[in-house]
Length: 238
Image (cartoon, rainbow, N blue to C red; front, side, top):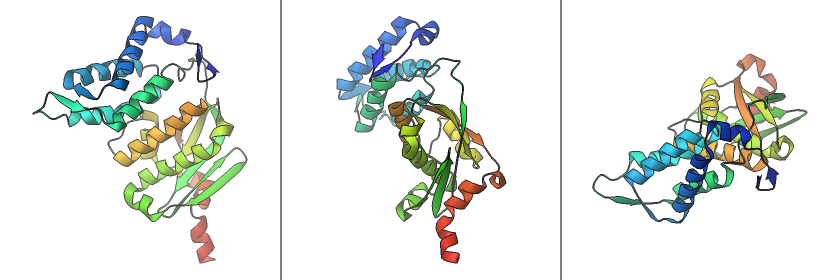
C-alpha cells in the first residue's frame, strides 16, 4: 500500500484488526469529513471504533481528545450538534495517517541522546551532535500556566527543529519532568494547552514518519539541556 509516498506494510495491523473493520472505520471517517451536524449516538459510535484502532495506532489517542471533549459537552437539550473545525482537523488526521502510521512490533527504539529541559524563561535541547536554546515568549508562559506544559512545549519545538533529521527513526527523548513524560507516553491530558502540544508533536511525527518514547532522567543528569534552557539568564548574570 502507498500512502503519502511511503510504502507501508499493513500485514501486522491486519493480523490484529480485521480488514473489514479497518475499511468500516475509513468509510465512517470519510462520511464525517463531509457532514456538518452529528448526534450523540453517532459520536459515540465513531469514538468506539477509533478507540479500538488505537491498540495499533498509539498516537491516535491524542487525536481523539477533542472528539472526547465534545462528547462531554454535548447539549442535552438538542438532538444534534455542529461538527466543529477542531473535530474536522482530527478526523482529517485519522484519514491521512491511519494506515501510514502503523509500525511493525520489531521496530525498536534508538537512543539518539535527545534531551530537553525548560524553565520559566527559556528552553534547551540536545540531539546527536546538535543543540539549541529558545527564549519563551511571555504569552506562552502565561498560557501554559505551569512548568509541565512548558516542558512539553519545548520538547515539541525541539522535535520540529530536527524533524527532517529524525525521519523514519523510532527514538527516545529524555526529560527531567516526570509528569511531562507520562503525558507524552500516554497521550492523555485534560489540559487544553498540552492537548494542542501533543497534537502538534504527533502531527510532526506523522509527517516525517517517526515515533518517540519519553524517558525520565534526573535533573542532575540532564546538565546540558538544563544549562541551555537557562542560557539567557546566565548571559544576563554574567
